[in-house]
Each structure stands twice: as C-alpha cells, then as structure tokens.
Amino acid sequence: MYKDFFKRFLDFSIALLGFIIISPVFLVVMMGLAVANKGKPFFFQRRPGKKEKLFNIIKFKTMTDEKDLHGHLLPDERRLTALGSFVRKTSLDEIPQLLNVIKGEMSLIGPRPLLSEYLPLYNDVQKRRHNVRPGITGWAQVNGRNAISWEQKFEFDVWYVDHISLFLDLKIIFLTLKKVVVKEGISAEGQATMSVFKGSK
Image (cartoon, rainbow, N blue to C red):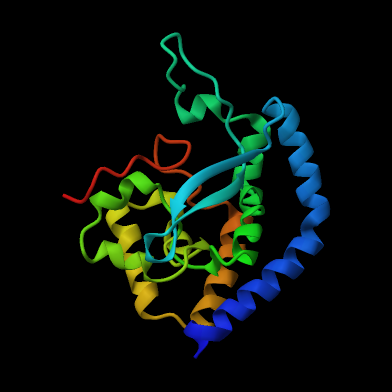
C-alpha cells in the first residue's frame, strides 16, 4: 500500500510544501549561478525514470561550458565554479528536482537517475533499479554517494527496490541530512563527481 499509493502522495505533498518554503533560497542560488554561468543557472538533461521512460531532469548548473582548443569540454574539476562547488557540497543543486517530484517524474527517495547512455550497459539485475521512480536521494547516496564503486551503488539501488517501506524512506532522509552536514561522499577519488560507467566486469 505504501509503495503503490502513499509514497507518491507523500512525495507530492512534501515536495510542494518544501519548494514553497525553500523558494527564497532557490531564487538566491538561481541568481548567483546565472551570473557565474553567463545567464545559465539551470542544467537540463534527459534521464531514464520508472520503466526507463525518459524525462528532463532539472538541476542547478554548477559547471561552466568551457572547452579546450579542440572544442572538447574541459574536465569536470576545471569547469566547476567556486559557487558551483559550494552549491554541490551543500546539495543545493538538487533543489530544482523538487519540480520533477511534483510532476511525478521522480520521487524524494529512490535510485538516482543516471545517464540514458548507460541503459544498454546494465545487466538484468541492475536494470531492476528502474522498477521504481528515481529519487533525489537514495540508499546508495547515504551509503557512499559518489565515493563507492558503480557495482556497489547498483547493489544498494536494487536492495532498496526490494525493501521499500516508510521506515526505510524516513531513515534515508535522516541519513541524507547527516551526509549534507558532514559533506561526505561528494566526489569519487580524483573526480569532481563520479567516473563514467562503462559496464560491469
């Protein structure tokens, strides 16, 4: 009952109320990033959601579009702005995704929506992460976020799909707040974010 009905009801109610309450912060961050990123405060990208249906994820843009002499984007760590680094470390870049939750494309809690080009690389077990709506935060995020391997992350995602409950979601929310405060697992070693997934070995 919780997974099929109440979870979506709580997602919509909490996301709507949360967005209204946090709207002043949303506006301040939006204006700051608009200056830092030359008028582009938002980042839109197609991501697979429930049943692999694609949607446009909305995040604050924390990196510039700077390119090298050959027209290729510079490495993440070189494009990450000072304000962008702060926004990412405090997880403020996730605020716009409340709009995705309100629209029903995402949940507050669930496996993170990853790049669409990863879809052909998942094995049958890893594909099960798409049996539920993707989340702003999830079981993998509170167990290492970007500091753990892809295989570990997918194991946590699938475990969550099999054990969804109100108690587990409340636990993840509590642990997420703790992670934000201590700023754990923001990046993989040597990366500004997470290394590219190339398929399981």
